[in-house]
Image (cartoon, rainbow, N blue to C red):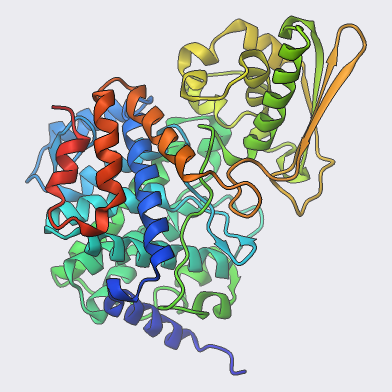
Length: 467
């Protein structure tokens, strides 16, 4: 079999993005895309008031500009790229959005939808696209981002946060498609994106607001790249695989077979729907802690009887941002959602892990801090199962309880979230900020479920904003 030629793979990407029709999409692909949109719309609404989002909206509204799209759920009207920026920041606000596509049984470690869905909604609104056109553009952008992530070998220890890299290409594909760019102009848009790439894990280390910035900048910059290309800006001839291109600058190499296989016929997108508003790698610890908490309740034993807590995880999480001492700083929620110690302690103490457990007030509860200080962490679970966790809780009477998981709830291969649970998550997000009437959540879910039948997206926008 002849190895793919880089320039030919680039040409195939351009052809797929510009020529694929809605009718070419498998029914399952359309169904999954609508689920991703539903999930992220909920996360935008649920994350509208998380730390940093109101401040960003205030700044963007003060700047003004020609209205192009709507900020959810407040209804502010902003130029298209800033509206997508604000909504994408909110989407990542609680770290609750769908993520991690799978190619076969192989996970693609990425956060794509929190950038691409807000960008697609903003672009569709500003261009007057139909629901079918929105879904088609989103599927193509998500697929490109997934393929670039799966095919690339990232430089070990370099600290790049992939949403700041591949998501911008995915958003440029979406915006270019909805703007009607031809292959030459779309290539220009990707070339412009090449000069916007960035993003680092340092924000996660620090628990700073900036952990979600890569998501928002990808939504904003990808749109602006497509708009610049539409206005005549040119870009490099091969921004993906050429000299000093994406792979050359940010990666250790690329498997072009992975990027090219099934391009234009098979479509990948985020497939792991989160049950808890925190980093995915805390979820098995939460699953285990909830199981132990239930067993303690059944035995009539409260959390005050816990003497020690031991958490065994995959080795890459030891001495990582997830393994820091529990010490909330200037952004308590941003610290807690990446803390294995908080995840285990909070779930054990409260017997739940929902949005309310990650507010600043909940994170600041001294009882949780005291329990988190008793958590020890080791890296004895297999490297090949990064979601795995084993939790052992020692009681003051000398007995212990243990729970173990190889994968967390929401894993699409072993324990996928049901459609009913995805809808329940949407309702929880919808009601969390109190900005929208609870009864309207069902109307929103009904419309999102038939998005491919909607010709005028103003109908959707009207439901998703505060009256």
